Every structure is written in C-alpha cells, then in structure tokens.
Image (cartoon, rainbow, N blue to C red; front, side, top):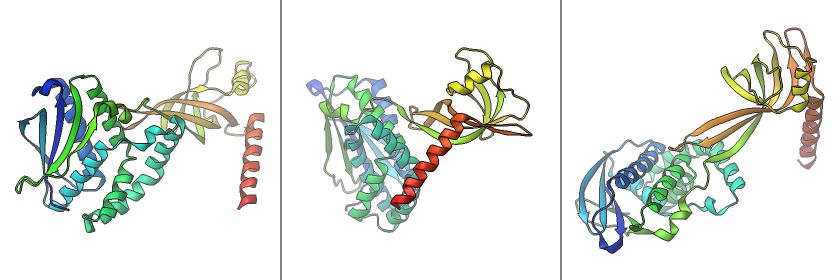
Length: 314
C-alpha cells in the first residue's frame, strides 16, 4: 500500500457547475470530518486535519492529515474512504433485526474487538486482512453509521449534486488512489429510516419516590441506578391494586420489576434514553416485608422453565 495523507471529497454537480450551496457544504464537511476523527479515535490515533485550497472540476474539497506516523494516516484514510463509500449491509435487513444487532454489537462486542484491532493496526497497518477486519468492525460503529446517514441525507435535499467521489492521494508525490464514487440514486441506501433502537428490558430494583394514586397517564417517580427517573406503570394488576388502596407505600419502599428502557440515536450517533416503563412488578419491598405479586410468581416460574429448557439442550 502506498503512503497516503490527503482525502478528497468531490461533488459532481449538474451542468458541470463549480459552485455549491455554502450551508450544505459546511454541514457535509462536519459529517465527513466527524467520521475521520471517529475512526482515528477508535484506533487510539491522534491526528490533526487541515483544509487545503478547493480545486475546479465539479466542486472538490481537500483535507490533509498530519500525524507522526505516515502509515497510521494511510490506514485512517483507507478506512474512511471504504466506510463512507460502501452502503451499510444492515439497511437491507428487517428493521427490528437491525436494531437488535446494532445494540448487541455496539455494547457487548465492539469495544473488546476494537482493543484487539488497535494493536493489530499499529503492528500491521499495511495488512489487507487487518484493514478488512477493521472495516467490518467500524461499519457497526453507531457514530459512523449516523454521521454517514446525515451526510447522504443532506445531499438528497440538493438536486444539483448528481454523485460524490472519495479519493486519497500523497501530497508530496502526487500519487492518486482510485476514486470511489456513489451515485445519487444510491444515496438512499445509506440513510437510516429511523433513529429508534430496540428497547432494552432488564430485571432491576427501583426505590419508589412518588407513586401515582389516581387514574390517568401520570408518571411514577423513583430512583434507578442512583438516578431519579420518571416512568410509566404498565403493570395493570399492580396499578389497579394501588388505586384501590390495596397496596400502601412508605419511606424506603422498593419494587423489583421488569424495566423497559426506550432508546434512540441522537444526531451524532450517541445512544440516548427516551423513556422508562415498568412492565411487570415482581415484588414490593418495605423495611420489614417482601411481598411477591401474582404476576411476579408467573414471571419467575416462566423464567425457571426457560432456564430448565436451556439446561436440557446443553
């Protein structure tokens, strides 16, 4: 692999125009630079990015990366070109499966794998096998996915942009790497149809701060993971018992429950929590007593049964 230090973004415009909407250009630049920086951060490499003069021929942007290790820069640019120009495979899957996969890969696997790849990349940056593995892993990075979606969505709103090209070069030798082009009709393949992610359900304990003692769509207040939260009570049996005053609360009352946490991606690809809901109350705990609910017993029996089935197959 030849050493590379420059990234070019080429807007191919209608009627061979050499001018582009300034706001669109600045917004697109933000997304591309964010992707390059996310790649370098994920690999534990610090780079400085400087802009170079725009050239004619459609509308062409140039950014040069500066870092002590030339091979590291080449790796970052190669990854950026591949990741920005290749449509994500997950967009062809069913939406629910996509969301499950994104969360699982982002939280459970990505960090561990990236730590391994960081070492590989530093030792063997020129290896095509290492590059392929790193592209595969970073293609599941939620920040890169969201930033890429933002970039192509911006372009869909400007009908003058007919395609975009991404190429790499060496500023000293003028060596040019093959340009990768994405056509306008393919922009949609990069855009997320929704920012919503599959809700997470967890068995946990919540300290009740403020129960709802009347009918209506009011939210309960409690403390979960040392943080104050508002949540919906979706357990109809427990809710009815509270309204009928069959269940009393005092200072230091807790519930063990199934908590549903709703989440979505924000504009920069961070996961943000959008709401909490208790779907099943398993037990109510006071200073002197623990009272299991009927729905809690059913839940625990079902849980034992499923665990037993798993052991059977093991």
